Length: 315
Image (cartoon, rainbow, N blue to C red):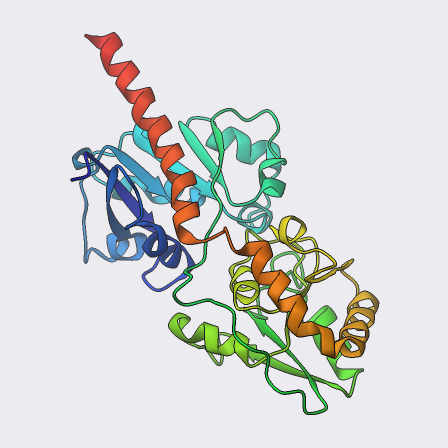
């Protein structure tokens, strides 16, 4: 029986933070996890008392700042938060320094990538808190037959427009695809969503995956596509520099010309994409949800140990 408890707070059931929570919640060694959602706390359909838990994990730091008051008896000394993306402060017009000041009172702050963590060199109590994929859903699959078209997949919200076309869909992806008659683009967006449980099948429809984002946290589609054995063409957003190399893809500058060049190169190497897909899987193989849960548990332990020391001093 697990001896400690953690309350995990995501934004909305079925959204990205909920997927993260569900992927790691059953994999902690010491902590029994429960999950609630800010949307439910806001509309009054749910409530929660933080005093019943040893640690509180807020997946979106800004939600915890704005809506933490909705959690009954919330003690900031119990709270971990995570920073998953540059967008979380850019779209609010905040600087790195301002974010650091807002977060400094939390006992543990997790970052989804090393690149994000490096933005806060002087921050104390920061932790690497990467996101992991579910290997039962995302695993190597054979590439589709080549029938004259290079099939490339992209997943996301093309309407995301904080500080411009952050995802690069209209600025780079569409212009590049439209200039190349040998490329077929396969997408899933808010307008044509695919259930997360079916995303492995979505990635399997393509020969490779595209990411042209200016900044990201992970991003999850990149990680999941590589786990499915798909080479990738990506900018250096999120964890891409940590997992993409010449053996499994193309790490490119964020320009339309660079994307066109990479697509032309991948088309010329169509017979090598299967072996590159194997290398893509190998590159991300260890980044499963169990591995991610281990890093989250280190944050929880830090908060637990810190509060135990505080309690002993009070005695």
